[in-house]
Amino acid sequence: MAANLSSEFIKSYNSFSGCDIRAVFGNRVIGTLQGISWSVTREKAPIYTMGEPDPRAFARGKRGIAGSLVFIQFDRHALLSELEGSLFWADKDSLRPDGIDVNPVSAGSGNSASATAFNQETAFGNVTDPREDQVVARPWFSDQVPPFDITLTAANEYGAAATMRIYGVEILNEGSGASIDDIVLEQQMTYVCRTIDPWRSHDHRDPNDL
Image (cartoon, rainbow, N blue to C red; front, side, top):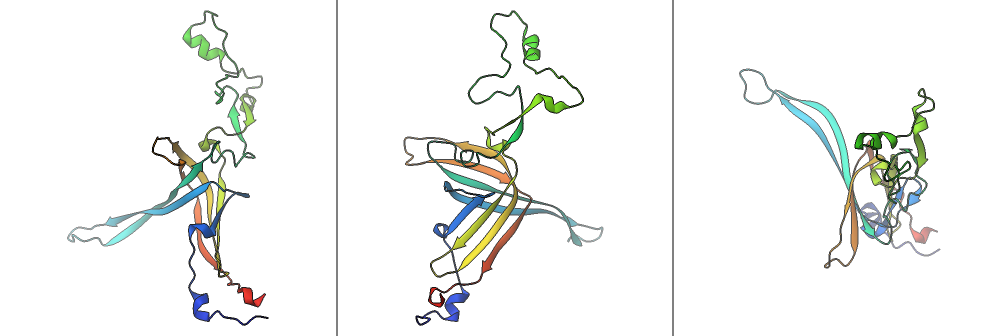
């Protein structure tokens, strides 16, 4: 066994860079993620009483957790292409990205605008089960993706490791763009979530002890 060259001081302070961190969405490693951020805010309001200009106390209210995701844009959607197994209940009459309506109204039918909109709606065979108007589909917008968890795992060359988790992520917005000055294309998204499990350190592993 090789001599142990690490001191307890070296094992006590560990840091990680973005190169040491991998992101797992659900059970899928996401290789296109370039950056992730999160913030925790909470409503706190001062309580005042007569005869005193300073607050007597502070009332605690609701908490909100939100953040952003930045992906590198390759030749496909940065998130939806990685979460192909995600499904949701879609309306049968929704317009798909290919531009084909499920129940198109034939041209030249002479229907009025209101009749055209009415004919585009799928008729119910059983009004007691509204799911007859729905179909299981893959998301074509990021906000249609069902809630998922994000796990960040960090491990550096010294054998130090840490993890953190973001639970119940819901995508709110997404945006992208292109410019003649851009070397790479990016896709940004914002999200809200249920809660966060902060960074937790794992036992340090020294390769000399293996």
